[in-house]
Amino acid sequence: MKVADIMTRDVTVARPNDTIQDVARRMADIDVGSLPVCDGQRIQGMVTDRDIAIRAVAEGRSFADPVSGIMSAEVECCFDTDDAGEAADRMAGSQIRRLPVVDRDKRLVGIVALADVALNLKDKPTGKTLEDISQPGRA
Image (cartoon, rainbow, N blue to C red):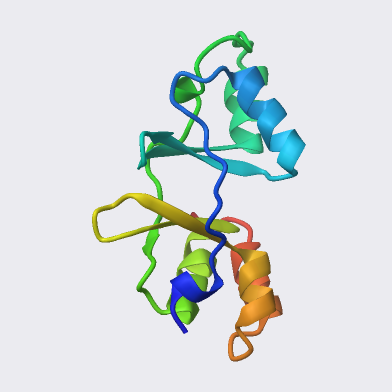
């Protein structure tokens, strides 16, 4: 099974110049803990609720600041043609719950989440993937 078979195609994104507050509100509205930050269709970074708490609130930044100042620029991605089980392994190895999906032109085409793994991959136990994602002290 390919990543394209299990991913969510309609991905809400943040733009680099969106304010921290607007992005936090967007995340709350759709009940997610992370968003890809895109300039057009290309990923520039990821922003998480943890980034907002640690890099914005704890540092006393203005919520009117652009989200590009707190996002993580290093983004783990996979291709839509990758094997879904391998993507789940990558999520576990990198301890991430949402993995952006790009096409061969590196344009964002979807996102694969732990829930997608749970609902679609019967050969990769979700509990094992979640356990690996949640290991303390791993990067």
